[in-house]
Length: 377
Image (cartoon, rainbow, N blue to C red):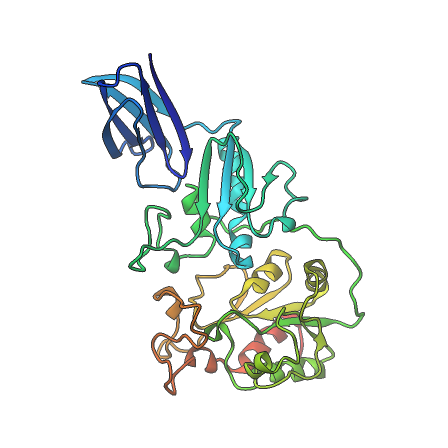
């Protein structure tokens, strides 16, 4: 008896099953698109082989007995269960990556099993998918792909798990490249229960907080200047961050407690925040998950960021960036962020140039861009 077990769970894998433990076979793992042999190995009964590449390749697996090819297997996920797991808990990552699950399903005619930390956003909008929580073991899957930013121990990118330098590409390309798809900017469908707006006046949502000070707009008093201006033009301003207004530590990062804002901060249910964004005239935020959520809901989204290059976030937004190439910017795209260092600034920490990328962004630049969109004179 001679048999072969093949699966594509975290990479291609084949196991040899033979009655004769002394028989030895040559196994080749080939990219069926380019015909490049990525890995080959000699195997005996009970042994298995798998190339180091874990992202999608249209694999062709060949087995040879001497010079004779005795077995060939071509990747075919048709009507098979394919598990796609999001390694990141970040809301922005999830939103930017999710549309490519549907593209993968269409291309391969497979059954998608999705595992994300934000399944509740998508479950009712994608009834053809099966959703499972992270850590849940799904039986009888044909293939599995893990989507994320993976590093080696020396902090270099692990190109066996993701085929591109994700730091230099749009966030969504992390997923499209891992799944072997052409990148095209796309928004996922977000489920929410539509309600009436909580106020009748026109309003703008703001989300000034983030997970690192480098992500903030660090112009002194900038947010209060925006609030006062739009209030003077008849627009209310609603703050929608999970970081609570009135918390001294968080307020200090904004130059003090913001005044004359509608307080929708703290433990507000996501469904309510989504409803606030749906009815808002515009949104102003930084490089964070709420900016991605606003964008996905078709709210006019302005992102203020200097620590990321404009190519990092979505193309179809109003991007406010560092005004001059002579000012340090884009450190996120060339360095690994240290989440344990709140004041991470790899080039100029503890100098007068720290966070100059956003300190140099004037409130007038943001005001003028929103006035043009809102037709404010």
